[in-house]
Every structure is written in C-alpha cells, then in structure tokens.
Image (spheres, rainbow, N blue to C red):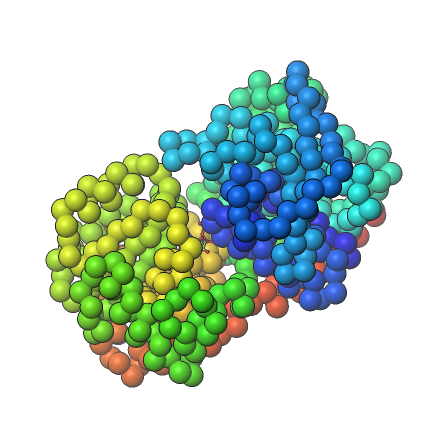
Length: 485
Ligand code: ADP
Ligand code: GLC
C-alpha cells in the first residue's frame, strides 16, 4: 500500500510529545512490512534550523484562506529511508514554537492548520504519489478527511484514497469561533451538525471523527473510556455514531531509538543481562543535578509535559511529604503551563536538597532521567497511551502510574493475579492514592533481589511496533474496503 502520514509533529524533526514519537516510528515499522510509506509535516522554523538536509523543489501551491492567498512550497528530507515532505510557508510556520507560547496558543492556529491540510491535498495532485491511505493525526490534520469527503468528493485523483484518523488526545479538539470558518476557506454549508458545527462553534476534531473512513485511538482502554460522558470531552455522542468504525491500537516504541544498550546520550550503556551500567547513570544524574551522590537512595524520576492531564496537581500535593526526606530523591523535567513553571520556580527558590525540579524541554536530560531513575512516576488524570512509561520500562525505571487509558494497558502491579507485575498502579485520582502506590514501590525497592527481577522483567519485554503495525495494516485494508463500497 502507498501510505501518507499527515501530522503536525514528527520525530526527529519537530516534537512536543508522544505524537511525534508515534509519527516518527510507526512509518518505519510499516515500511518493514513492505509498504511505501511517506510523511508530511509543516516546515517549522526549528526544523529549518535543525541538522536535517532539506532539499528544495519547484512544486508550490496557492491556498485561498478567506480574503488572502497563501503560498506553500514543497521541500523534502528523509528519515530512516522514509521520504519526508515539508510544507513551507514562512508566515505561518517560521515561529519559535509549534502551536503557541507558554502563555497560550497562536491565535491563527485554525488558519495555520487549514493551510496545511489544504496544502497537502493540493500538493499530492502535483506529485507522482497517489496514496491509498491518508493516515491523519489529531485535530491539526482533521480537515484532510473533511475535505476529501466533501470538497474532493468527485475528484478522480482521490477516488480510491481512504482516510484513517487517529485520536491521540481527545481533550485538544481545535475549537474555534464560527467566524473562523470563512478564514479557513469554508462556506456556511460546513456549519452544520453533521460537519463542523459544535454548540455554535467550529470543532475540527469532530469533523475528522465524522468523515474519516476509520477512526482509531492509541490504546484499547482509552478507546472504551472516550465513549463515556466522563472522558468523552463532549464528543462521546459523536464517537458513538462511529462506534463500529472505532478501534484502539496500542502505541509501540522504536526499539532502536530507545535502547539503553546503544543510547549515546546516557552516561553508560547497559542491558537487561548486564544492568550494572544503570548505577553509573544514577550517579551521573545525581551529580548533574546537584543531588547527594548516593547509590542506595531510591531516585524517582518524571519527564512530562506540565499540563493538568499529567497529574501535576497530585505531584505538587505530595511534594511537602517528600521534602527533606533523606530516604528518597525526586527529579522532574517538564515544560508546559506557565502556572506550573511559576510554582516550581517558587519551590526551587527554597533550596530543597532531595528534590530537583527542572523546567524545560531537553531530550538529552530526559534520556538521562530514564536511565538514572529507579522509579518513574506517571500519575495521569487521563492518558490516551503514554510513551513515558514504556521508555521507563525499557530503561529499567519501574513505573508508578494511575490505572487509566494506555497506562492501564501496559503497567501491571500483579495484585489481581492476571499478569506478572512490572510496576505499581493506583486507581483514585488523589494525592493519598499516589502516595500509597509510591510507598509500595519504595518498600519493594528495599527488597533488592525481588527488585532486580522486577527491573529485568520490565526491560526485557517487547514494546516495539511489531504487533500494532500489523493491526494498522489490517485496518488500512478495512478502510480501503469501505471506501470502495
Ligand atoms: P504526551 O504525548 O501526552 O506528552 P507521552 O508519554 O505519550 O505523553 O510522550 C511524551 C514524550 O515526550 C516522551 O518521548 C517523553 O520523553 C517526551 N518528553 C515529555 N516532556 C519532555 C521534556 N520536558 N523534555 C524532553 N522530552 C520530553
Ligand atoms: C498524546 C497522548 C499520549 C500518547 C501520545 C501518542 O500526546 O497524551 O498519551 O502516548 O499522544 O499517541
């Protein structure tokens, strides 16, 4: 099959979170299955300034958005032998961030991503690549299936192109005032309940869910959860309409990208069979962050977006209990909401010796935390899949997670006897429940032999895309079958 991934972020070019990990690594697994897979994303300023060879071509498009005509240029790069197309428009994408500053989203995001979606479809018609599958990700690309279903309905070029829309996070929907419709180049026929209208606003995620041939999300548990009022973020009714076409496919990891045996950025490489290097990483991390260098004090790590989704409020609630405790160390790396930055800066100003809160996005430091930590915390309020816990497992940091979404599908505490344990879980979204699970992990850490076994079991499991890539392959065929009907 010819498959085009359409995404707003793709590792290693542009990344704010797990979406980029997925769009950067799933194509590699699909290529191994024999498919012609390619990727397209916007040419952000940071991509242009990065270490990637970018080739200029002559192809361009002109996209009308309201009163203005915006020009886009096709650029090309590669990643792991996969062609990566980049859509350039300096007005929209030559900015310091992908979606907005810590103070808030860019006010013209609707136009930026409408331009991207329209540009992708127009460019395809000028290229020698006619995809069987357009695999779109999150609200930023939701207009691709919408345009295909309506504007390109009779277009012979796309007659046999099917769409699969993956929801990575239902809470971010691309919700805009109705005046945005014209600014994105749509007429009022799109402002109806079966298209983009949502409580008198425009909802791009809703459009994607309603018009894609198939809809997936990134874990089986989250797939069930989003059909409920509690977790449906107001779209549970829309999702119920597509219930028969909705699937949960668990994310994988690129086993080469995340491998403590070959990682060039950690202090010393190690393997499940010879894990001694992990102690060197712990020492390196303690030194780097100015913590007491102590091999026997359990080190708890966290690498996260600073957003309420991630349970940062639970963490801040237990900080006073951890503060000054000589039997535990905490290291956090995170960036996100300004309110959390402020809170952590205030905390740091007090100079607490056993806690190191680091604000920023730093992929090297992140790897050193995965490699140096004994325990990895993800007390998420909700979690569509989560990659942090998978990376932590692979790097021998035992996860302590709230049992929700993809965390519930990948971390098991073994208490119900159904699975062998690889971590610690808790149910209630409360500081006490998190505290209790963390205490269980800390006690277990003291039982050295059992702990080593737990670490080794986590490190040894297969978290690769192998199984899920096969599942996507099957779903692409289902989508194509539906398209031909
Ligand atoms: P989400 O996509 O919701 O943020 P995931 O667990 O799926 O959560 O993926 C997070 C990805 O982003 C992981 O690869 C993690 O290592 C990375 N990451 C998150 N925050 C940071 C940060 N501050 N610095 C470096 N990497 C980060
Ligand atoms: C989103 C979700 C996260 C998931 C990632 C990749 O960012 O918050 O849980 O792992 O997408 O699918």
